Image (cartoon, rainbow, N blue to C red; front, side, top):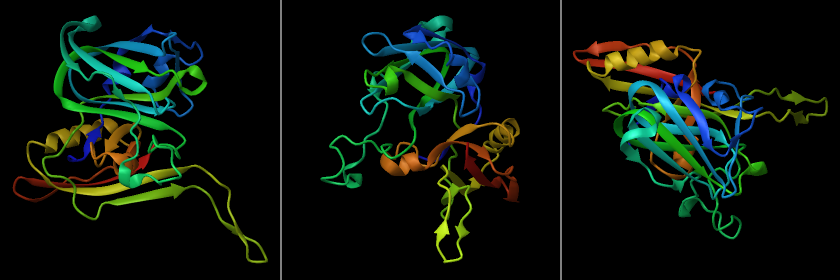
Length: 281
């Protein structure tokens, strides 16, 4: 497990991307993945072997260390792969290759409900959607390739809402104890004359709050620039416990927006603090 990661500048939104294996669904274009909105879905019909490939060029040579495929409906047996290259159009030296790895994490042994869960159970089995994450060492790249392998995807389509790609900020010192996690539901309970309480079942979302108390002079400008870029209007991706595995990592990772703009305080020399409050987007 490593320190919190915040991918606040999304390079995918300005990238040039196309489907090179499989067929893009005309009503669910790839450009939807470059815009925020839960109704904006991308769909790719894979080839006869269940394979689809997306190739992309970034707007400029860029430093990246994270990729997220968010709100997808791939099966528990799906695999995916990321390759990064130094030149445009997936040419030049290959800088990173994840190889084909599982796109959907399975439950850890301690999380399995024995004799109830299937032997291969996903931590997402009771969720309305799934997401997949790649975290890797900093890498300068100009282009890349995303490969999806899944013959059991919902409706036979490789479907997803959003892609996040870029360099996630990771502080040298992690957030303080007393971080908060909460499920939120926008519904009102009503009580009848007889005393029964009723409420409409509405989707639940998450919110996190945490404090970074040991930001130094080298980290401060990066945090300030990220806050300025995201504001209250842009969506970005956060993982409080990256690479922790299991339900803990999944529950504490999400597409989000800032609930309020963090204040950078300067309590003493070479030290700044910032309190974050984010809500699921």
